[in-house]
Amino acid sequence: MKNNQTFHIAAHGDREIQVTRVFDAPRRLVFEAYTRPELIKKWLLGPDGWSMPICEVDLRPGGKYRYVWKSDSDGQEMGMGGIYREVSPPERIVVTEIFDEAWYPGEAVDTIVLTEQHGETTLTQTILYNSRETRDAVLKSPMQTGMAASYNRLEKFLPSLVQEAKSA
Amino acid sequence: MELSGDIQNPDDLDATFAALADPTRRAILARLALGEASVMDLAEPFAMTQPAISKHLKVLERAGLISRGQDAQRRPRRLQAAPLRSASQWLERYREFWEKQFRRLDALLVDLRKNDLRKNDLRKNDLQKNDLQKSDLQKNDLQANQARTKRSRRKQRNKSVQRFKKT
Image (cartoon, each protein chain N blue to C red):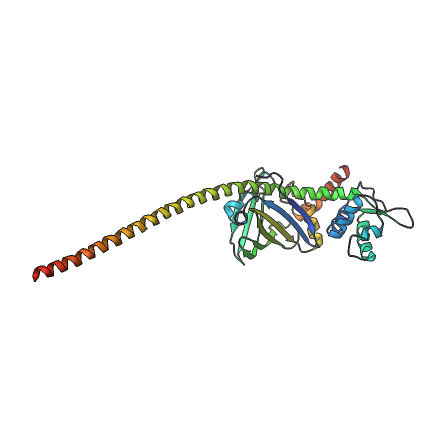
């Protein structure tokens, strides 16, 4: 297994964030890991110390999905869900995303594209937000310190993060 | 225009991210990282007019990412790294969040590939068994055919013997 996988993340255009990553596996398996609940639960967990008690997937255009994460330490929950717009195994998924406790406004549209070469899969994931401000706010959000960042909390958090940047 | 680099309020970060979200501007910054340059120098590698490059430079200046030199004639641009450092800190947090998940996915994919190989081995074994069975069946068919042929020939012979006996 390679240790230094190619990983890029960047603001893209006006309203998007783009993530690219190479995986040492055929895309059929990456697609399964992205779409089968028993597999999703094993990796889509955010920071350490969270589990995924609810993971439901109805994988078809118009089908819904629902994820709920729970913190091991304080039982805090965070839910998210959306609707599939396109499902083309093993190469493409287009799906919407809204958090229960909306920490960014509006709905995001997530496009996942998988391409395979020499047994390796390149993931290109593009998340489209409803505005540039929203996209920038997402990039600045304290995802590392706790996934449940509601918009209110984000506003309170920013001054302390500015302080951090100042002292860095 | 120089930025103190100490304080980065949210609006400044917005400007920084907006500035970085364009490949031409990123390329300009990369060039300036190597040393100051005039507008002409910066425009050169792009199929772009100087006014178009100047527009990009204004965005970068507003974000405090570049400054203008004092040389009245050439006004070379210089890279100001401090805003980039702050922006990259933010981006770094976001990156780490994603990378943690992807490392978990790497580990899961290792397991899935192992299972896949095991299934393939089992399938290969089954296929080999099938092939053996097929050739067994073929042999059986051949033998059955041969036996049938023998029997029908015997029948015919017996019939003709009987006819002979009758007469």
